[in-house]
Image 1: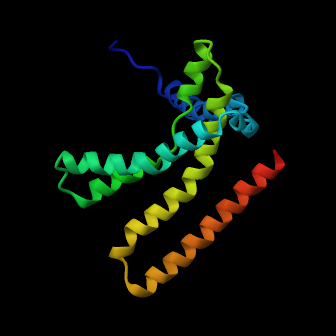
Image 2: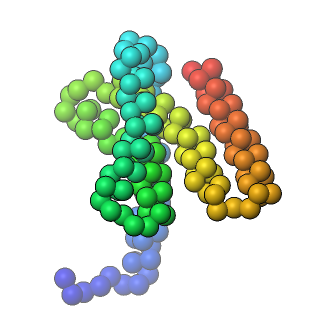
Amino acid sequence: WERALPRVLEELLGKLRDAFAATALITLGLSLKARLSVLSAKPLTAVALLAAKLLLMPLLMRLVSQLCAVSSHDSVNFAFLYGMLPSAPTVVVFAREYGQPSEFLAALQFLGLLLSVPFLLVSTVAIELPTVADDSASRLLRLCSLAAAAASTLAAALYIVQ
C-alpha cells in the first residue's frame, strides 16, 4: 500500500486510536466483575497462585536473567521488577471465550493487582537504596512506607465496601 491518508484524517484517526486503548482497558476492567467472595471456595488455591505470582515469579525472573549471563545489574533488576508486574486480564478473556468459569480468575486477577502495587513500590525503593546517599535513603524509606500505608488503606477500604 503506497498511498497515505490525508494528514487531517491521519491525525484524527490517531487520536481516536489513542483514546480507544484507555477505553478498551476500562471496559475490560468493568467486565471482569471481580467478587472476592468467590475466592473463599478455594482459599488454598488462591493463596498459592498469589504467592507464586507475587513472590516466586520475580525471583524466578531474576534467576533466569542471571543464568542467561545478563551482565548489566540494571537489566537483572529490571527482570526482577518485570516479574512483579500484575498479570494481564487476557486469561479471563480466554476463559470466557472458551466457556470456562472465569469468576475465580477475575477475582484472583483483581486481588493480584491490588497486592502487586505495594510490592512493586517497596521493591523499587529497595533496589534503589544502595545507590542513594544516607540522608536521602531515610527520606526515601519514609516516603515508601507512607505510600505503602496509603495503598494498604485504599485496598482495605475497597475490600470493606465490597
